[in-house]
Amino acid sequence: MQPPVAAVIEAHRTLERFVAGLSDQQVAEASALPGWSRGHVLAHLADNAQMFARLAEHALRGELVAGYGGGVDERNAIIEATAGRSAAEHRAELAAHTARLEAAWARATDVDWSRPVTFRNADLAATVFARWREAWIHLADLELGVRPDDWPEELAAHVIDFLLGRLPAGTRVDAEDMGRQWSVGDGPPRTVVTGGVRDLAAWLAGRTPVLAPVAAEELPPLGPWPPHPPQRLDRL
Image 1: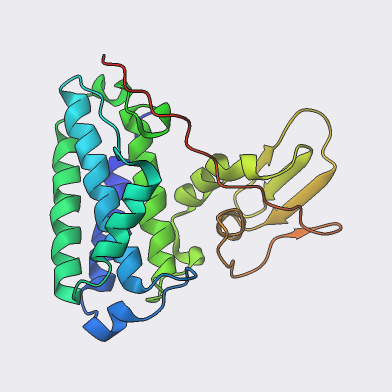
Image 2: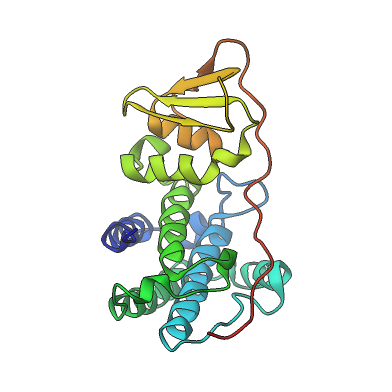
C-alpha cells in the first residue's frame, strides 16, 4: 500500500499553524493527557519525528537501527528533559525534525517503502502511517481547537483498522456515516458498536468523541494499545 505521505505533510502544516501563536504560559499548561503539559506533547511530537527520520535515513541506506537504544525509558527521558522548552524552542525543534523527516521520505522510491525498520518490526511505509496517527491524535491532545471530529475521514478509518485489536472477539464496528464495517474474530457478532467514523476512532484511541458510539447493551471494554514487538536488529 502506498503510504499517505502527502496527507502526513498536510498534518504537519496543520500542527505548525496551531502552535504558531502559543505563548510560554500556554506551553506549560496541561494537555488532555494526564500528567503531560502541552510541552510534553510537543516534545514527544518533535522527538517522534526525529526518531522516524533516523529510521528512514538508515533504511534508505539498507541499514537497520533501533528507534531508541534504551527503549521506552530513553523515549520518556527525552520527553521529560525537553518538555520545558520555551514556545519558540518547541516550534523550532518541531519544524527542524519534521523537515528532516519529510526530506528523507522525499528520497524514497516505490521499492524503498518495503524496506524493513525496527519500529513494530514493520517496513518504512508503516512509519508514515504511524506518523499520521501521531500528528492528528496529539493535535487533539494539545487542546488548541482541534477535536477528533476534525480528523480526516480516511485517517479515522485507518485508526480503527490499527486499533481494532483493542476490542474483544465477537465485536463488530459500524461506521454509519462511511458505510464501513470492521469485525474482530470470526463468526456472527455478539456486540455491534455503531457511530460516526471519527467518533469510533476517538473512542478506540482513548480520546473523547463528540458523540459517543453506542451498542445494544454497554460498550465493550478496550484492551491495551497494540504492543511493540521486539525490535529486530539484523541487517538487510
